Image (cartoon, rainbow, N blue to C red; front, top):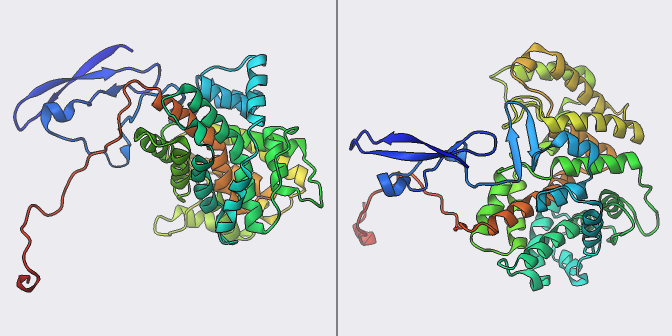
Length: 432
């Protein structure tokens, strides 16, 4: 990386310091302020870290203004169209697309680790039957460190790799089991003759008394959802995984922390919120009424699944799922479902109406993923679980990159303190 600099001047003292400007391979450059406190005795205040780069990463690049999302330089549209989730996982973890032999080796390794320790399944019995599947995910994934402690030396590259494979391979089994426990159905074991997506669908929807027919169209849509959610740069959950990992916590604990962060409705719950919004609208003839409510700044109603905090253009992932949604609705015979008619009318308005176009309120990935998952048969409380399952490879790839950094240090955000200054303790009977 080449370095330039900028001059920072403290108007209180007149002191000036040159701050290095570091240029990445693409995207905005950054100001190196690592010695800012040493030089000025000041902290930077940046709530939400909207203008702060927390790390140097080679994994994912986003340009929200242009609607670009790339993994290791490969556009997400190409990966979703031509790749598979397992191949994308290899790319995220190792930095390059695999050769045929590398892919076969990696896929076989994942397949060999799909089962979970039988005692881990007993862990589910400690939860109430009506426990939210995400609550189960947080606990069970965190508990993996109690069952697979033979690969917890984070300083050993082989241990890091096998832990990553275990996360990738076991998350579908754990996720499907959380659904089965919630519904009272028996657990379904992995079928290693199936693809990653098909295996997950089978564990979700088959029962000992009835085989689940796996549609190639639905399996392909599921694989696309996994690819499109695999990583998304330094979002809240990924930053949480990195911060937890900076303390040298074990990888399973870090992934559990990421799942916890993802559970928040402002992060991973958006596609579930889309379905709740469609239910609230109720019928297609009420769409225009709710569009007007969305336009009214005094109205508390908000259209969910439109616009994005990062993308100020069309979400590139939404373009892919838009086409997949059509195929799934036709395959499942749900195209005439009133809920989906509402969704399609909202989509039409958002793509044609000047208000939406001017404000760039395009349908995003959550809008279409919610529609697809409902059509396949997933209940809304599983939507964020599927997000976590897909994102697990991004989390573990970011964790591996961070742990391998020679300059790794524990995260320690600073603060602007605005509380009481020093005061002395007084006996309780002397207090006003």
